[in-house]
Image (cartoon, rainbow, N blue to C red; front, side, top):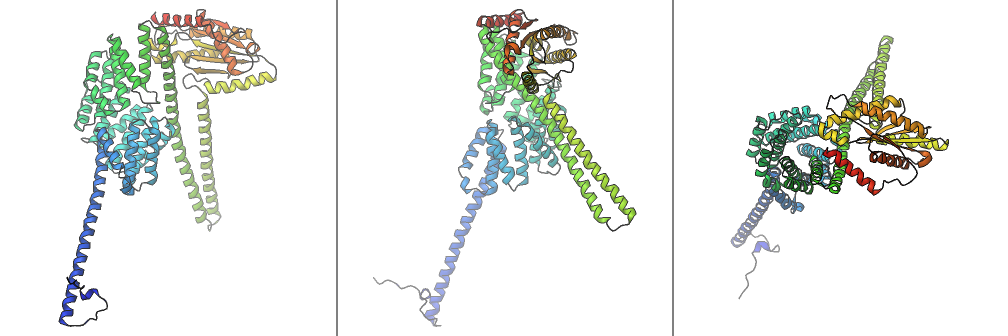
Length: 630
């Protein structure tokens, strides 16, 4: 079989002859070339359509996942994981959008150390200003929960400043959400209510209205203006259910149930939460899950269902947010302590009380830190604005100097006056900044409630004084005292009464101590005094005076009819040495002896063991429990 030769146009060696056969070959080549070009164009268009379709499809998936993140968390998680498997094919904007969603997912799961860097990556690398704004808003919430309050409030001040120039509705929604949330966390509930009202007005009828109404419910509850069956809760649940926002709807139900408990409607609180208990578990949001459990525990406790209350309290601890002290965790430890007391189990009661006291102390420290960070961020922002204004004034003065250089003597005098004005502004700004520094230093050294030295300041001053006494061979004495049955005052009369007692006790002691700076609050209801260049006899006499002053200091009956007493321990450097920790431990040992001997007395440390005998501790525990029962 003879093989056909290729067309002539495919052989470059064939001369171009205008014969009939040659023209036919040329026509065949032209048609073949056109066919090839057409095929290449078709292939190119098909591939382009596929690439564009895939890009559009991924953009759509990212947007869909964004809308589902709080309403359908399992589907959101599945979509983020699916898109992440295609990361090598994503464009740079898609990668940043995915990082934003991953940051949200990590924050939702409580892993803030992983979420914050993802948000930072978006803020630093994204070319989309709207996405950067949203990432900043989400990062602020995570910084606050991670207890990085100063960073959170600093970023919030910048975010609020950008709000006026932000027109994207979703970005404004997140910014207003972050502003309302952080102001609520800082205890600025009126300001939080203002931001949530603005959000409600801008996003009425949309998903953002659900978020706004949840924030309004929280602010109104904290302001004691929320009604359990009122319009705010009804509308909040209605709009959140309409947009299938399960998490926000159940946060509202949590406040509603808490309001039921506050008004003694325990069965209604249980019925409400039980109807939605499985729904909350499916959200996997630990903060709301543990909140439901502790509210159910408290309601059952009030109804006398001790076993159910115990079970729900343990669940609240088991489902808590890792490495975070929340109100639900504090409530669970407190309730388990009360249950153990009811069951006459002092060992278990003491264990849970210690956990409750530690969690409560951490919560108070966190609240103080948050409040201080809020004030510092506000003052920093003000100082920054003043600095900018001062620099602007200085620039104006320099500009005037250039303009006035060619003028006569009268104009020169005007220039000098303006220059002096600018320098005066700079001086005033520097003076103001120095005053702020002194203010914050004083704030960091004082206990915010009693206005005496806090723990760190007291220890610092005491160590210096003890070292000076050691060098000069002078005696010093430590006095440690603790208010008796102070927790009962908080439980029976409220924390406002407890705070009032602490303030009055500190004021009464200051009237005897005069200008002595070595008087501090070590924590809770425990106070300490260091008397430099003094002796044990003088310290005991002073302690007796202070003990009587404490007994009289809080008996005016304004916040309740109760008596206050304190147990004092005295230890001198002659018996305990000049090492501060050891000296305080000896004073603490003496204080334990005072409590063991009946409280409301002064005990002196004698040479011997620093720890009370185990039987003594048992007697102390039994005495505490007897006091609680009575």
